[in-house]
Picture (cartoon, one colour):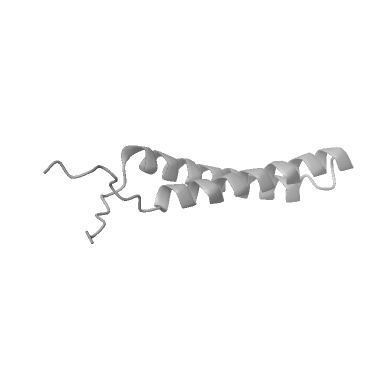
Length: 79
């Protein structure tokens, strides 16, 4: 049985990892804004800010997993 070779991260994985960090940063900004403006807005706006923060965090989590996954080379040997 052949050993599976894991190449370094590909360009798109690096781009996705950057997008994940941006999504986490935007989620953190969303938490801060939600806490600052919690008393000044109505319930619908608070709910939408909370939902946006949750979605950004979830997107960041998924993109982080995709960006850090070690994807093996599946090309057959050219022997």
